[in-house]
Image 1 (spheres, helix red, strand yellow):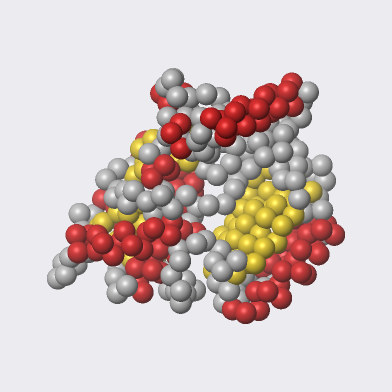
Image 2: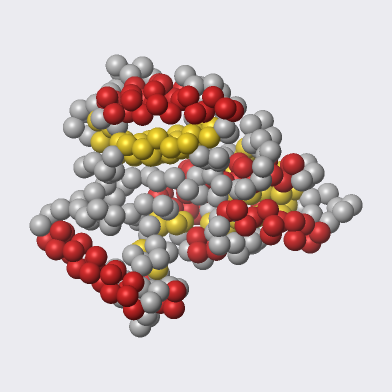
Length: 329
């Protein structure tokens, strides 16, 4: 879409969550300054990560500003097509613009792994149910354990990992059980928006697993497109923004966020004695000492005061700070 042909009113913040695995190589470092300069000139805010393997991030702008930056990104090598999710926000959803150079746009910690052209086969949401219902398909959730606890596909394998970079060691330890020699097995993988399973499927193919698939657009696209009556999803989907979790049709979920550890907390978890709003939950109570909990309590007090004044608070957005924003994984 040309930058001068934006469909958005000038006063609306448009938000774009995007990624693309692309062969940037060493040229990635040279892309940073022009991209930062364009974002600053057009008033676009958010975060973009550049690495030899591509680009990942979430940005927001007003009027035609966002489209100008997206056009610039699409002109980068291999980025004509982006994985892109759009949203709107009533007020600025970020404080500033950061373009950062990283080793990876999503950290798996496997040197030499090239997701470009090596990822598994994309499966659209309309075809996903048939694939994972096949008894010869092993379905793997590539997300972290706290995300899986909020919801997952029925029958999916939970690796129980604390971070994405734990996934390779888990798979190597479980490979003989998951894909035994001599048995034709299909592996179907999924994550929130697609970026992690795209890289995880490339990893499995590098490990010699041939028939690997992943859910195109991730869980969010599935929940948006597949009717609830036909869905094999159970529970809610954790998202990395102030919505915390969503259900079918991307409707608001029931989870909130522990401001002490930023893990999701269910309604039952909020009834637990360890849950203190803005301070702790059952998952992190023993991970923090009294000094840190006191600091969290003071931060929460300042947040409440800011909310009463109708303001947001740095580091802990208030309800007036773009609760519909898509964030990256």
